[in-house]
Structure formats: C-alpha cells, structure tokens
Image 1 (tube, rainbow, N blue to C red):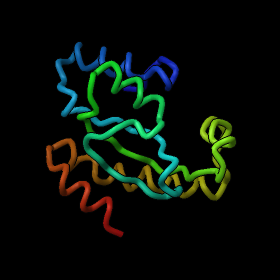
Image 2: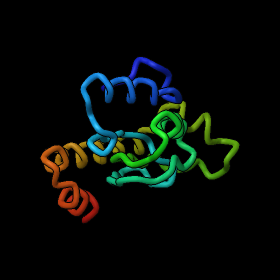
Image 3: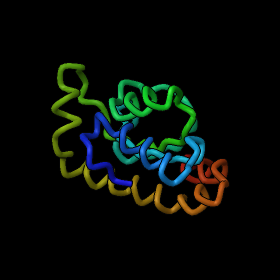
Image 4: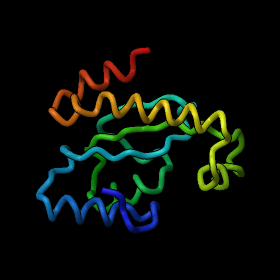
Length: 129
C-alpha cells in the first residue's frame, strides 16, 4: 500500500486497508524513514512507539497501539533538531542516496522470509553484516 494521504496522516490509509482486507495489525509491515539510523542501515522491528515519526504516530493513534512490524530505513540525522524538517522533506545527498538504496535492496532480499512468517530469521539476516 502506498498511501495517497500525506505521510503524516498515513494511519488513515493503513487502518482502512487493514479493515478492508481483514488484516490484523500484527500482520502488517510499515516501512518508514528513521533519523536514528545512519544511511545504508535497515532494521526490522516489532512493536514500540513512534519515536517522533509522524506517520507512525498517526497509525498508533488510530490503532490504539504499536503492535505491528516496522521496516526502518536509516536516513541519518542532520545534527540539530532545527534542521530535522528540511532534512526529512528534502532530497538525500548523492552519497546518502546510494547508501539508502542499498538498505532498501537489503530489506527487499529478506522480505520473502518476513511474508512467510519467519520474521526472526528475516531480522537475523538483515541485522547481520
């Protein structure tokens, strides 16, 4: 699902799709950018808070909990909180863009395991260099 809503309001699309296709939140994987990971790093996670990520915040608000899978794609942090909004909304630099592309490809490689329900093995492979 690629929401047609603003990303900060993506919970509306996510929860509507879950209702329509009768998908439990625990069977859902949301991909999102992650300031707390450097570019080139992808991590899988289950459960948790929004960590300041507004799309996750909206999804958690509408679900009433954070018990769903996440694919966190590192974009790095600009260094100061005043620079976060332009950093997140802007284009990645050339070098970071290449690293982010590698992280996405690494995640794609393990997604078949996650889809089959072997989330632990998918995490192990993605998180091991």
